[in-house]
Length: 138
Image 1 (tube, helix red, strand yellow):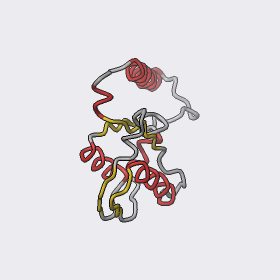
Image 2 (cartoon, one colour; image 1 turned 90 degrees about the horizontal axis):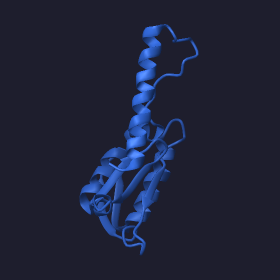
Image 3 (tube, rainbow, N blue to C red; image 1 turned 30 degrees about the vertical axis):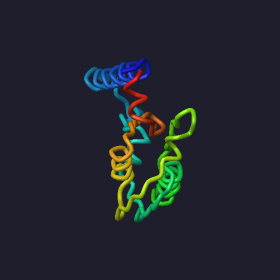
Image 4 (cartoon, one colour; image 1 turned 120 degrees about the horizontal axis):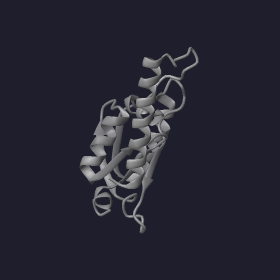
């Protein structure tokens, strides 16, 4: 776990602990914001149209997911995907052939991660995709 993950976990733990304290101590008010899931995590359940890619670079597939998630999201937000490519751009140019019928964003990302060996991290405002080996080397 790196420093960013630890900081996010501590912050999330503090927020959840404070909200529990506020509820039990009477600090809750009518204007208290609800505890919510990060917006990027809500986008994982968006159902996409059929995904038919033949010998397509990973970068193009990620861009397709991003654009189609906006079109399929009733709120028009979609998901923010960030591809952390290798310094030489090899990850983004990896060519794939994938066919899935009406997958969710999560299903398609799971398929990509198992096929290419990706690490998919859901942050507060984005879903970050990088090579799994790069994460294990940290």
